[in-house]
Each structure stands twice: as C-alpha cells, then as structure tokens.
Picture: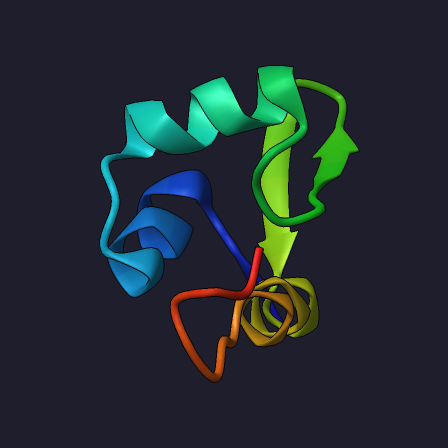
Amino acid sequence: MNLLPKEAAERLRVHDKTLARWRVTGEGPRYIKHGRKVLYPVVEIEAWERDRLRVNTAEC
C-alpha cells in the first residue's frame, strides 16, 4: 500500500511541507516518484520509523 504525501505526513504527525523538505535533504522515508506523483510505501515508512527507535537519549 502506498500513501500520498498528505497521508504520510498525517501518519508521521508532521506537516506535508516537512516531508517535501525531507525529500530534498534525504532525511525522510524513502518514496516513489511516478511522473510528478510522489508516493510513500507504508513498508518504507515503517522501516524509517524502526530506524529511529532509541533505548535512551545517549544514542545518536
């Protein structure tokens, strides 16, 4: 399943403009560019979230 940027932003609780900035900087989840359309596979969002799990504040 793929999410549109607005849907992905809602899931991640960020503004859709934040996702647009992350696409430029490479900070956000991986996405698909199909022509002019941007799609976020749910599995990529879940992987991105997993990569950010921390045990304590000392982890980078």
